[in-house]
Image 1 (cartoon, rainbow, N blue to C red):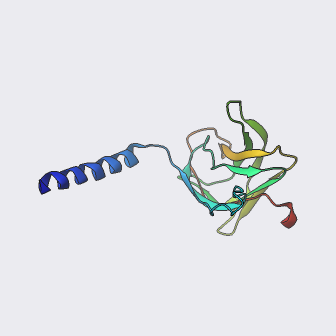
Image 2: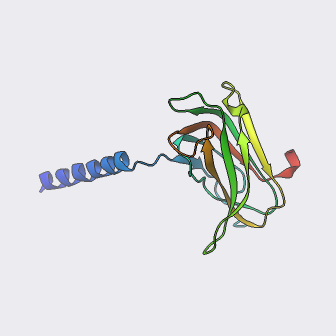
Image 3: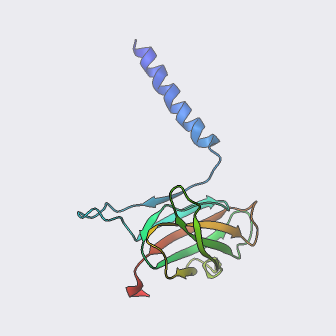
Length: 158
């Protein structure tokens, strides 16, 4: 019986590892603070992205009027990085998403402390996310990494 349990565990771990390897789609991770006692959604957050492709969508956050998205220390895998285009979008359930416009980020490619940001104003209340539209002007074939991604929905510090 013990051999059966060990084989099942090995099989499960091997399956998980194979799924991770074969997944094929690079991802970014985000650390989310717990919601407040009032149940309000977290609005400001920081994360990083590793080898994401054009079309990548960030996690969602709630916003009512203003969002600012910062990228610090950008690089493109296998190429000299020059720019990325970031599209802020309104996630509407059971309806097409709405684009609030695309910003071109270039300064985040200028060394280890390079930073770029985009600001979007007069947004509708709801969940928002950003999407990578272009990397070095191309819509495919390149992967972007960003050491620090910060989303800020507070106009007070701008």
